[in-house]
Image 1: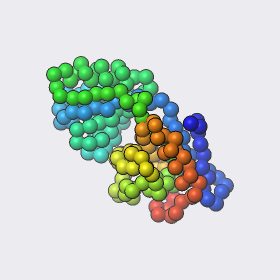
Image 2: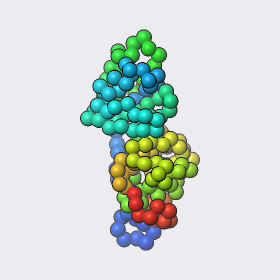
Image 3: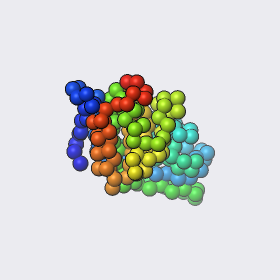
Image 4: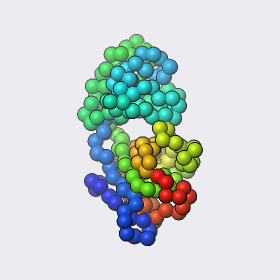
Length: 191
């Protein structure tokens, strides 16, 4: 997959949205009782982030924690650290019902950045991406074209998309093609 891919708007000229693969990322799927204080403590210990609420994503000095379902989190960590995080979780939650898996090799994270990045994602997904429905700090599990995906806004015009690695090429090509077709004006130029 290309290291970085740029897509210009339909009018041509300046690049308005960038789509790129962020490369290796540490990722851990953690299932368990999200109200368990021991689970919350190990998540914060590993990521430096507080536990996210429903549909939330929180950031800390060591990574991020994303709420994926009522009993599931995704931890985003530096590349190469997920295995050690799984071991730490196992030790901290020994005797408690939980599942922690290193899914770093199974997932890919794409960056979608630019003035109309929100609209680009809205063109490719059935999710409601209006800023009132998906504000910064919330994650949404949905579809991107024909594949499962989740995405969130990190700031004005800065989005992250997570997909299965096996379909990352499709997802990136879909976003690049949609970017090349230009915006349709649903959200104006706000990202």
